[in-house]
Amino acid sequence: MASVLAAALLCLAAPALAGQDMVLGRQVAARVDAPTVAATRQPRSQYLLHCAGCHGVDGAGSAAVPDMRRLGNLLRLAGGREFILKVPGVMGSGLSDAQVAELSNWVLVTLAGSSLPAGHLPFQAAEVAQARAKPIADVGAERRRLVEQATRLGIAID
Ligand code: HEC
Image 1 (cartoon, rainbow, N blue to C red):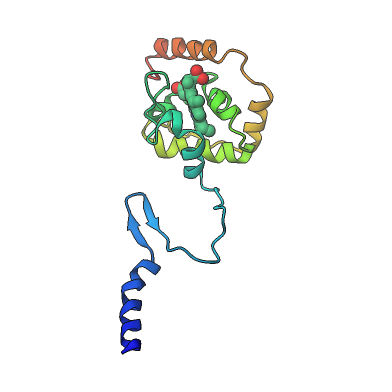
Image 2: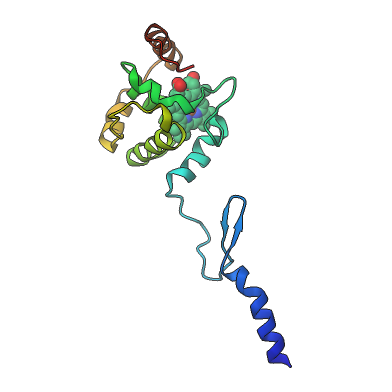
């Protein structure tokens, strides 16, 4: 009787052990040997941790934060490519050059893919290092300069 009960309980537990589909992804069953701190290496996780608080999960931003879903249009402007790497949220993120390259590439392709210019080349760590070595003194003024340039060219970035 006890073994029948144990088998029945095992059957009930099996789907839970295999993991369960949840709204935000797959819920993994708890394990005694699971690491206590999950490594955050995926660019999407980096985005959620470091950027989504201001930019929103979908990159839509708010009244005070620009919409990143058209970020590819910045790449069509002189100075726009490096500006993406030099905004305060990126400069002060604490991420390594390689992580910033990976995260920026992820943002461009995943959130702003439809705005990417043809022939766009992804960021590399060396380019991030170069950009970070020369920070922008006045980000607001630089963005206004880019907006003026975009308006002249009929490109929508705001
Ligand atoms: C504290 C809020 C905040 C956080 C966190 C933040 N940003 Fe921003 N971001 C802004 C604001 C505000 C702007 C508008 C430019 C400015 O005034 O700095 C901006 C502008 C940008 C731009 C330029 C877009 C444009 O149209 O000018 C990019 C690219 C960007 N952020 C990327 C990121 C990434 C990637 C992260 C995460 C590593 C991040 N930001 C984190 C607030 C934030």
